[in-house]
Length: 519
Image (tube, rainbow, N blue to C red; front, top):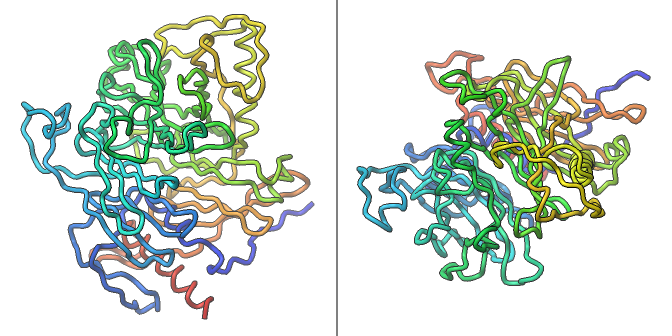
């Protein structure tokens, strides 16, 4: 059967603009607190930047009810309307700080010199039940603040207790908020954070209480803690002593069904045996799963993720996005329409080098959960080992037990934590060896599934997923808006574009198209 390029009619008016914003968030763009708009010679509306000190956005979240857009930046949080009009802003920095001060100098005098430091937003989430915005940054060892959703007025900033310090590392944080069905006035924040060489101060993964009153001691405390067990995973000091560069960089977090998932980059201790000295460091992508109701983290399981294209392995996660499968894609994959799929961009180069050779891959949560359940069942039959040497310090055998393991099993006080040995492989959809994909988002249009990717050079593409004879195949790319104009007098046509201009060009083009469609 001949293959046909799947390019569905795509009027911009039906595509959520924040989806495109998501694509290029890893790159800088500016919407200053005082700005003006104008029309460029090409007929597109653009923002004139009036605050040259404003720097890049780092995170974006869209309110599911209002469509309002909240963006975390360096030293600022801003709110935009659904049509990208600036609504409010909140300045978060710079602040007087030193990353070596623990606790921060506002709590206890610090022997290290203090200076003005940027506050980089690392986490931005809407707490719907609390009707507030949670924003966590790099200042004062990674403290968080709560802001009103309407005007970004600060409701509280937590910095007095050790539970309030999540990590001052500049990258590698992801989280998700889930409701606590047993306590109506309380939610749980599952959060993963790179510890930046301070494993004795910060947990790598934890579950925190979010209560209505920001001043109560319970706010941001661990969901469970006794003398021996708590709702956290800490990197052992012995692991850091053997592998000084060991850390876990959390890239993406989401919930699906009764589980919480994290995708992270983790130093490969086998390939870096003996610490690897000053040689190249090797990382793997891991997916971590926990039960949302597991307060003791007995359900912790991690598995390596990867993708292979034309015999080449891609193991370095760049971005990910969870999406409900569209009707056609679900049918092709043997899934229900409400089942989740996961789009992941991988690179094959080492993490220390900006990768340009990348591949977009598709995973189904069904396949990931099956691999995890199979590992749990085999371990409770006494087969194999726990396979978590970085956390346990050694290989421990699984213990045989007559427990019946179902798909929703949430762990026990033995045979945990668990690690998978084989790589869960994704389905390669599209490969780019030139620009390097760096962001991804999914969208369901009618019965079809679209994937949008953003590149390191500031371009956004749309990919349709073609299904033929029950097999899901990728279409070739087509460009929604390919920016080629020079952004500075010193730049030549076709040279690497400034990310601020790229994203503003894409956003304003889409906004103009939306206005035309409406009229």
